Length: 198
Ligand SMILES: Cc1cc2nc3c(=O)[nH]c(=O)nc-3n(C[C@H](O)[C@H](O)[C@H](O)COP(=O)(O)O)c2cc1C
Image (cartoon, rainbow, N blue to C red; front, side, top):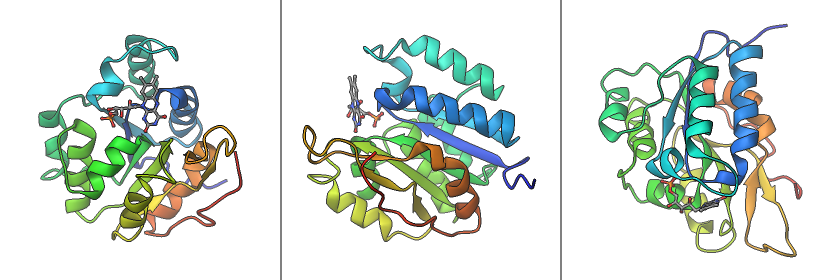
């Protein structure tokens, strides 16, 4: 078995799609323990500081830190060095909120995650986006289209998650993060991008 991510420095930038945190944690564990990747995390202020019905922020933060063995980046100042010291091989916004996606598509850099993305893209390194948003087929559709057309940006395949109750909602297949990262390292988009309802 060849582990393509072994020893690779993988950035996982976490934004405030709290319902996906359980799955995200599972995949971070797989990246570290099974794939032997060296994982560095970046938190948006929202994902770092917000307790929700999906869990407590301090507990989630502590678990991520423990699994990766690195202190997460939680400030814009902390994320900025990713530009001049390009240490990440690949960065994934995992999960990516509609909010962060809209800002990224419009060149806004006001959170640690967006600073990391901007710094990383400046070095022409691959950036992966794992969407999770109720307005993917609404207000954010144009931003998805915009970002799909940007060099060095790749998507985790996504589909609708409940067309009856949330007709504009789309969510990425987080369980595909390993092959998507492997493809992104080769500057390839994993296919197919659009998948059936989750
Ligand atoms: C309980 C809860 C769940 C949320 N889930 C999502 C989500 O799945 N997708 C999304 O785009 N926004 C979601 N949001 C809204 C974002 O957290 C909000 O837009 C926030 O400003 C995102 O900031 P960030 O992108 O900097 O992390 C949720 C908010 C709360 C309180």
